[in-house]
Length: 97
Image 1 (cartoon, helix red, strand yellow):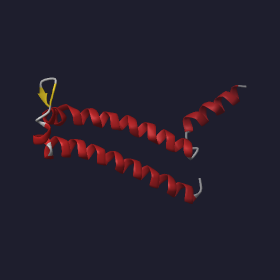
Image 2 (cartoon, rainbow, N blue to C red):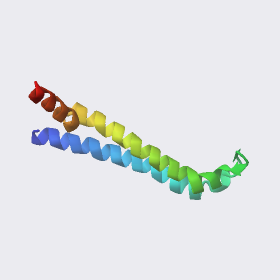
Image 3 (cartoon, rainbow, N blue to C red):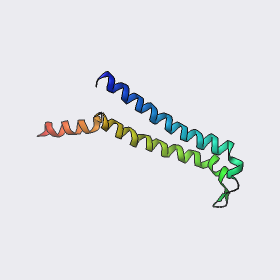
Image 4 (cartoon, helix red, strand yellow):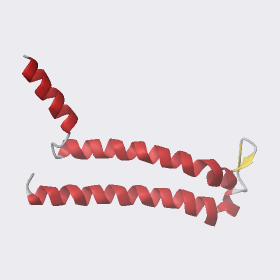
């Protein structure tokens, strides 16, 4: 990989990470702390939404964001031809022939 491609790859990677961190910060800090009084007016399953986000929702969002990060990084790796798992499997199949 050339230096230019490596720089573009890492800029894209940092952009993805910062975007996902912003979403997590907004959900955990924004909705779980700052906007909790507004969200508590909404009830989900008998529980106040602000309470639910602070106790459970932020954790669920974090887990979802991990999977979103994996998906986005796979797409980025494919765009820069860095998907080593596929390359290894192709090499092993070719060696077996």
